[in-house]
Length: 306
Length: 263
Image 1 (tube, rainbow over the protein chains, first blue to last red):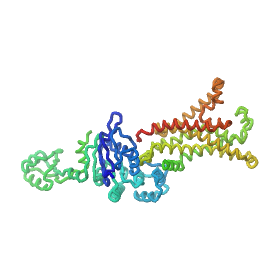
Image 2 (cartoon, chains in turn orange, yellow; image 1 turned 30 degrees about the vertical axis):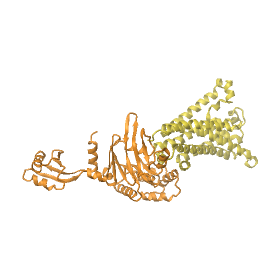
Image 3 (cartoon, rainbow over the protein chains, first blue to last red; image 1 turned 180 degrees about the vertical axis):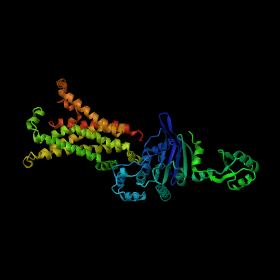
Image 4 (cartoon, rainbow over the protein chains, first blue to last red; image 1 turned 45 degrees about the horizontal axis):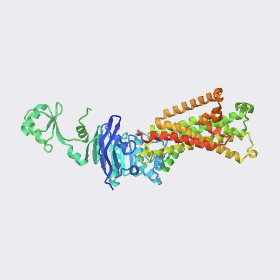
């Protein structure tokens, strides 16, 4: 038995001359929540579609639960639940009707799972209301319920919290955490809400222009996310000169007219204010900041403009 | 495969579009049958080129007359059943859980057959019910007649199924609901118009080889094959022609569906 639910080997996808995926080697272990982060069009959805057999790879292979053969992959996909881009629902059926269709596709006999799953996503009271009358958030929850119906061992979720209200987002986060912890389900999840990803994921993969540029665990990310002292003064130029002279600081970055980032002395920021005392420089703001996932991602991909 | 078929049948039975189409077919059959009832017999006989139209032949005659509309209904049906699944993304549901694309195609074929059978027999049963107004059922009942209706109906259902696969093919190619329905309606109208030209073309009708191949140029219309073979009762030919048609259109559908990415 492979410890990996998903491994891709040089996975490449071409659309004409465009490379949507460029030799991607991704690994997802059992029980991990893999946050897949990238800009729009970076290749996240394309990779997820190839994993779910909705698109074919131009080169490279996909390994699901240790299987790479056609039959093995088809069998592996019966152990996957997915929600890619948008919930795929029959608008004229009820929530239960949609679940019934999926039960039949999956060959599930016990309908108790329908009630349980709908309850899990808080849609058990929708009765005869048709899906076309659902709000975006309700549709998203139903999409999640469909993905969970076969009690998957691997969940592929592309922007699953789109359209959810803050309470809904928290609930989905808790459900996913519970599934990973209690059932050992591996989750591949993409989202543009990076604060959510930071709270949820145990591992991260960063994709840019079809290339998987970095894979790391949450612990490793914590180590890589630098702390710095954010300092705002009345005279940045003079501040930098004084700090270099008195504290011998070298890792200093001037961001704007009044903001300086100091990547040293994060444990003793008071030394900075003491050094500036009597120099005639006014301190407007001084605090220690830990770089977040968003800043890390921007730093990794080279800024906003592309 | 059986799971996918089961899901397809479930969806068909709960499809509002299908219910509406079935009602349209019923209404048309009823109106045509009532029209036949009120039209004087000699008028009908003239309309059928001197052939006497008896009440017992009405289910067959009405079916022949309504085939064109049923073909359009099946075009709409293919659009709703296949293209709409690409439009709203539900096509992904079976594929993403490891079901084969060929299973999905067979599921759609089964539902198209069910639809064809229901369309044909809705028409025939409706007409039979209406002609009972004029015919005393008890004294005229003949078990062979029921068998004839069943046989004829099934033959026509097969022809309709074969016909519907043109639209299924268009649906798999276009993956767009409006486009599929548009092509289905346009195609049916053009085909009907062409057939009318052929039927009324004296020049064509005089060609001996055509007379030999097909006793009537109307046979050029696929939708007429079933009703045409009735006098000879050669249903095997109908079945084989339909199967050949389904195989060809099915191969094209599967070819376009098998490797293409699903958006």
